[in-house]
Image 1 (spheres, rainbow, N blue to C red):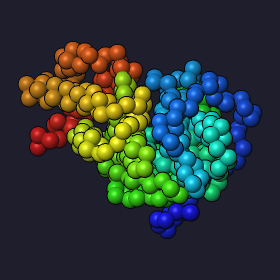
Image 2: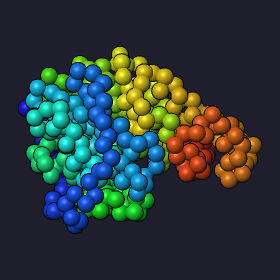
Image 3: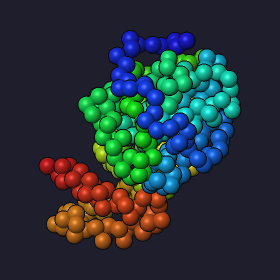
Length: 318
């Protein structure tokens, strides 16, 4: 099936048992349409907002790619229920099975849906960055379940940790049927182990949370690394960029998110050099970021983002 297959890492599936709630009790209630981006690439756009009970913790952009050897899913969402929703959408497109899944990074709102995919397609290969795999095996998976369950008031109850069983790295080309997936492993950017995917024949690029559109959220790695990854993505010959959150678009979405990050970091650096603490500079930085205040998650996350930028500027000063 695959023209490039490394020796599989041991699959770590903590549980494949039945839900602890009644079947269908927590099914995703809203009907999210499937948007076709190219001949073989489709996206389900999640709500561009924070995790909540109302959105049942679904907020990212799962992608579906049809190939001559089966279906590939990228980032199946935050729970077993989002994973099952993706499966239902796949079945409206094709009768072919899901043969592979890619996880862009280790934040649970993107990959906990592996559980829903695996319950229907137990032989599907799940790809992820080595750092992501190590983090989940060290307990990050259960941490994400608890955190998202708390924020969503139990909306992902019954979700189990299903870890990627195939590590990928920068430069890997994975051919599945007639479609080539080129992996860009950018290391520390939005997270400690991001991958981005170029779907070569379709001229579509999936960035994970390295790109976000009118959406801010937890940031756990490197602003400098994120900017470097965006510069790399901008050089590619693709037509459509699919961000981790928000609407797809052309290179303009790179420009907009780059402007946010560069403004944030440069303002923090300026006030750091003036001797201000992150708390003292916060109002001034927020004022400089005025054009971004309408972005989803701004109020909830800007304090933490300023703190992280402060720590990064401080570390770069030594």
